[in-house]
Amino acid sequence: MLKKIRLLGEDIQKRLGSITSLMVEIISGVTDMKLFKMGQVVTKRYFRQNEVLTNQIIKRISKLSQVEAINFFWSSFNFLGILIIGLIMIKSGKTDLSTVIAVITLQNNITFMFLNIGIFVNNIQSALASTNVILTVLNEEPESNSEENKDVSHIATYTQEMISLNNVSFSYDNKKSILSNANLNINEGENIVVIGPSGCGKTTLFKLLMGFYKKTAGEIIINHKEISNYTLGDLRNITAYVSQDAFMFEGTIRENIQFGKMNATDTEIIKAAQMANAHNFIMELPEGYNTRIGINGMGLSGGQKQRIAIARAILKDAPILLLDEATAALDSENEDIVQHALNVLMKGKTVITIAHKLQTIQNADNVYMLKDGTFEAQCISKLQTN
Ligand SMILES: Nc1ncnc2c1ncn2[C@@H]1O[C@H](COP(=O)(O)OP(=O)(O)O)[C@@H](O)[C@H]1O
Ligand SMILES: [Mg+2]
Image (tube, rainbow, N blue to C red; front, side, top):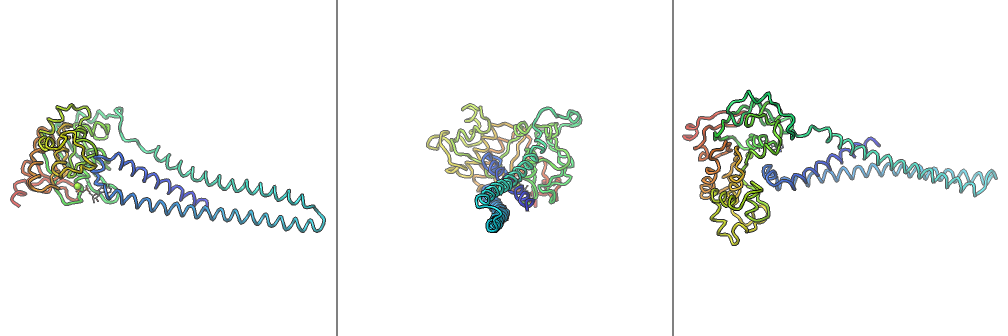
């Protein structure tokens, strides 16, 4: 019984842990939250996890009450036993009432002590369960975030590629593999497009490149350095990411653009907005750059949000640009405007575009189809005639 309670305790701690990390994800989310396409999914996941947690807590309480009931039964039994024996002994003149009362009081104290031991053991059990979880976390290998473990032996061997995947495999759950022995080489300044059916792992490729997940096997070389030798900060500094539904937080338009470079001056912000074709519509807003937008960009159209996201990325000026169906959610008029802004952003950068429209493919240096976990080079002219 106690073991069951402890196991339940462990399970509850684990679930509490995952709910907490889910909350952290939601709160610290911003780009990540959108990158992971959370929103409703997260809320659903949160409710689901909460429901299971509640059930486990109820189960644990019911087991605990069983233990307490047994304890209570035993102590009542003891009390009754002593009372009956005491009465018999008083009747036969072997003892007197005061002794019996003294014995009962003492016995009560002892029972109380043992009951407390029960509670104490329960507390220890749940503490042990928490300790287990804490130790598991402490024993986790930290995300490689230090500069110490740079493996210099790699550096000499790589050539001009900006991004290179060598036999990379990845799975979220160790069952279904998303990438399996995938190879991909992208030269500096090259502009490649990745196509493939929904769910084949295109966004996952970006998540790996941004260090949100670690590859299961193989090497990912970015700018001549293996990805695990980067600090997460450095890795995210060299990549800019634009998804189809850019994250806007509650605040002014200026702040939303500045997000790309926290110490940017007003001139830099305006220049980035001009390049992203966003300056004009911003100036038409009642308070220009000081116009406040609601959470998730309420008050802006999809195309306007995308242009702000592009201005943000222009300001960031990272050498690697990851575009995840950045125009997919737009109507064709907005799509053209945003595509123009994207073209400005792409200049001089190494770009991976995830696309499903042929229009995007026209300017690509290479097109790859992600299929069964590997990248297949496509013949561009053939794609265009199809
Ligand atoms: N965080 C995650 N945990 C588990 N599975 C995931 C996660 N994100 C995506 N997947 C699964 O991985 C597969 C590839 O997803 P994704 O890279 O988003 O596909 P694409 O961008 O090509 O549409 C899908 O089957 C998806 O359900
Ligand atoms: Mg995707």
